[in-house]
Length: 175
Image 1: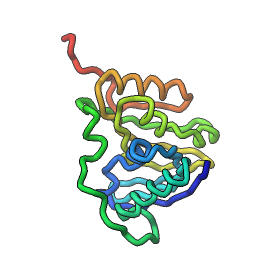
Image 2 (image 1 turned 60 degrees about the vertical axis):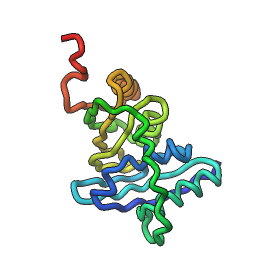
Image 3 (image 1 turned 180 degrees about the horizontal axis):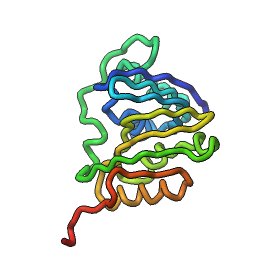
Image 4 (image 1 turned 90 degrees about the vertical axis):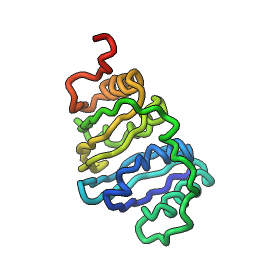
């Protein structure tokens, strides 16, 4: 399968969208973060896209239309259809900080797996990450409580440090 590296640059408003999650849902490409610097003001993410030639072309066209590709002319904006995250119920949002322990962990497409395997929307909030040394990424997981809990449990099995901002994840339904 072809693999293409792209560099995304965005202001905070554009970065508040779950772009990587959308790429996996809309175009079925595997996304793997190579480098990421996401702050309160801007976002820079270098990532690889893996998929068929057509899927990669569609995904890069989408990124170009959003004006996120460095040095690319903005194409026609995407149609005003509802974003795919609108189809996922999001009653719960949990903030989680993921920190790599070993440099090898930086090569796994964990956020892609979470977005594909669980009924949650994954969005990067802040990051200081490099695929050679690792680093940390703060994400939000939004979705039904059981799916958010399952996604966090999966992340715990990967060997990376998982630090949720909340001490417990519950909907207080049995109180």
